[in-house]
Image (cartoon, rainbow, N blue to C red):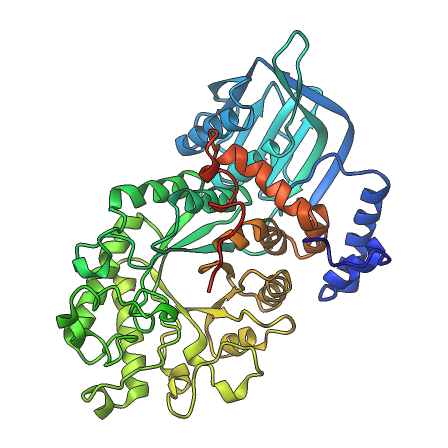
Amino acid sequence: MKNPTPASTSRREFLKTTAAALSATAFSRIALAAEKAETGLLPRSIHPYPNKVAWGNGTLSLSKRVTLSVGRDCDSGVVEMMKETWQRFTFGAVELAVTRDAALKAGEFSLAGGRPPQRDANATYALKVDASGIAANAADAAGARHAWFTMLQLLDADDAAGGGLAFTLPHVEIQDWPTLEFRGLHLCIFHETPPVMIEKAIRLAAFFKFTHVVLEFWGMLKLDALKELSWPEAWPKTQAGKLVAIARGMGMEVIPMFNSWGHATACRIKHGRHVVLDQNPRLASLFEPDGWTWCLTNPRSQDLLRRVADELMEFAGPGQYFHIGCDEAYSHATCDRCRQTDRVQLFADHINKLAAHIEKRGRRALMWGDPLLERAKWPSGFAANGSPTLPTHLALDRISRKIIINDWHYDVKGEIPTLAHFREHGFETIACPWNSPANIRALAKAAIANNSAGLLMTTWHHLVQSIPTLHFVAACVWSKDQAALGLRQAEGSLSRAATASILRKLVPANGKFDRAGWNTFELPAEVD
């Protein structure tokens, strides 16, 4: 599809439109950088674009063999990641020899003889490339990974003298830091989801400096708690565990998720399946009569949800969070027993007890915010599911403030007042957009303005559409002043080309069609 921007629209006008939500000062900086790029292209496209960059005039060339020196206290996982990604980004053409150097601090590394630069007080990493080599100074293991991911984006393949491949890097000095601390990606594993696409999303998100990945298995992970919670074709933990290991190896925390109220079918309601009841209808009492929502007055349901949470937390490895879902519970408390209760208090008690159970395991509960918003109070397009017939919004003041609200709105492109609403009621929040750039930008801007913990990018059943947007998500959450420049670095088709170029190295296709790109087809089949 061609770029919809009219040819007569200037680059500055386009940027002004896409960055309308930014302050005048921030836009001015972005526009100047963009105009400079028009007259002289930036030496490299970097995602997310660093906060402070000074490009030099020279280049550094690497070929055949280079030495990477790290501190003696450098995290061994970081070193393994460095070796693996170096091999992938240089196609095995430049050998990497790794040494431990007592003169280097834990967060420092030197490649090809570079000297670690001074790091600004507010920077999480500093990176320098000059005639002496490449070096970085990071605050911690995460900063060292981020410096390395930035450095890999500076590599450009060239023919080496005498044959073979060489790689050049422009001289540059970078000081960098994130605006939002929590930068997450929510991934769903459906029956049709190819494992390699989940791997690609995880590796790409980590490479773009995301910090967390939420893994939600829609009936596609075999669980000991109840075999009917997964389809016979579900992934065993040995297979799914490889994705967990990849995420952790790339520096991301894995957040396990299980829908603990609505979406109890573990299937899209559009097609009418129910992972449990289509296998064993005798388990109907675990759910409300239509099966969509868990029955909260049934102690067997409550016990099962806790056992599933325990199993998933153990599976995901150490971490700070567990996502309990809890959106779109339209049939809450509709069975004969539940209807006799205070339905609002029933909901509040369920959430609080589940969160307390998770807290005993050393984690905090994340939950979707839509049941705590009154539909009549918010404009059309906002995800608000409290209503006169299902007044769960009245539980707002009864819910534990230790729970972090994931505030999702997918059709909103302007102001996001709900984040401030939750904050005023004492909740920590995470903004959650979907795959529209305008929606992503709006939620990121609101998260920054409202001192939210961060942003969680959702993908749902649109993973193939979402993968090419991750560079823009990264730009929006990394630097409030560089979001529009992040867009300009890779507009339209170029954004897909840049993403594909990185993915070819992160997850090589090895000549196989269905491993290449981010979907399994070239011409899509007809869909309903």
